[in-house]
Image 1 (tube, rainbow, N blue to C red):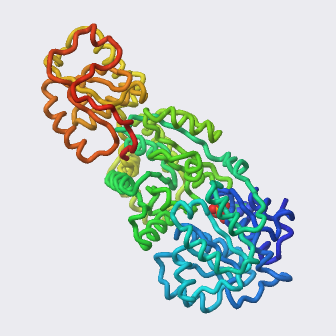
Image 2 (image 1 turned 60 degrees about the vertical axis):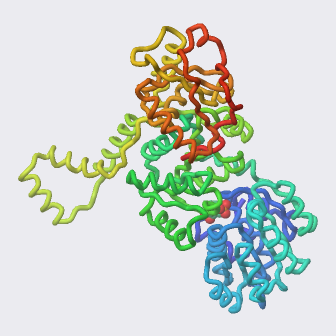
Image 3 (image 1 turned 90 degrees about the vertical axis):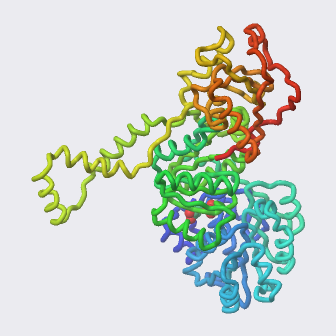
Length: 570
Ligand code: AMP
């Protein structure tokens, strides 16, 4: 099917853009059964939904091939964030440009007096965020009395963000006969209720299943120690060297931390979160668009609506809260037929939960080990050879310098210097302790703990307990790096690790235990991830037979462990 039934100005705009065929959601809204009706559409970002509602509105905006005269706005689109609203405004501007439509945007953080002037000059379409639209409405700058069609984009997000009141006030100001289109990634109860109140006999359309055929996104899952999330992210970035990569964190603090860490290591990275002003956000997006930056660290809300055509890698640094968010974030890549990778960094204790989430969403992810410095080095070599053997245009000055170099150095030295110059720009990959899964250092330790007497160097060692046991998927492979990070010790300072049901016990070499205790106290003061580590009462090291007995020894004042890893740090 093609777009051929559309009014000529829209058809021309689409073909100028190279959009030959409608996406599933566009097909659904253009179906004769959907024409002129209120629609409740579940569609995701990346599905072409913006163009879909742009086309759906054509019946209300264009009469006999001409844009209807507008004394006041005819169409209104409400979106949850500034970025999304501005992006919608850009999409509708090119789509309706040949029809001669004026599109005004009204978004929080922008200059309101300029917006008032644009509204006063007359706009056919108004795109905005709920709070700002409500302000203009209350001050009399926005006249909705002639509105023919209202669109709520990402309605579920707007309700989640607490915009119900604003939305209701805005919709109440529009004529009851208007058409209302509600777009939402999910249709939970509050959305259904909003639809009942503000729509008339809405037709429900869902293309989510079809859109999921983001067949161009390859999902990968990487199980890592919670202490090594950041290193895994760095190695992923270095392995793929994506033109643009988006990293998702759960909180603005974690965005700030990871961004600082990446910049420190030499990555060209920007950050997007609620703590950034509008101009900072604009600068960050501009840097990504003109490739001064290649990595964007963001929270879910701040990244809404961002469309970067060169984005080929999405990393879920912190796990999405549900399958919808997983798909939303991942859908930033693999857009418009391009290929993309969505990688989930999975702390070992969360592996089962993630498997269940992927199963529920019917996503087949490949479980892979984080890239090692060796595999990254091999990829770097291939890329360097590829880059340096590509034909380049040289001018006479380049050749002249080349000749002078050749007079002083051998061709091999010159070529090596060129390679070096490229390599020094690449941030160094990280060694992952837990990555040595097959070396199984932890397993060896666990076995040793249950076998002979004290290991050399562990005479007089101290024992500690941690509230992570088999129930939390405890495994020496990830406990070891976690303990090193938490207690400022090295692998060599940790002796046996015994995994119990609800908790595990481990041994710290005598010479390092004071440092370990001190570092623990500091970590406990500023961490809220639910991990508790306590010394086990002083006394002789448990006898071998006791060690083998399943389960930890109870200690006075032992508290019931809270579930660990409520929040991972990135
Ligand atoms: P959206 O779901 O609105 O965020 O759109 C995702 C991207 O797909 C945007 O860059 C659109 O311009 C693009 N797009 C929309 N419709 C089509 C189409 N029919 N063919 C190709 N690309 C499209």
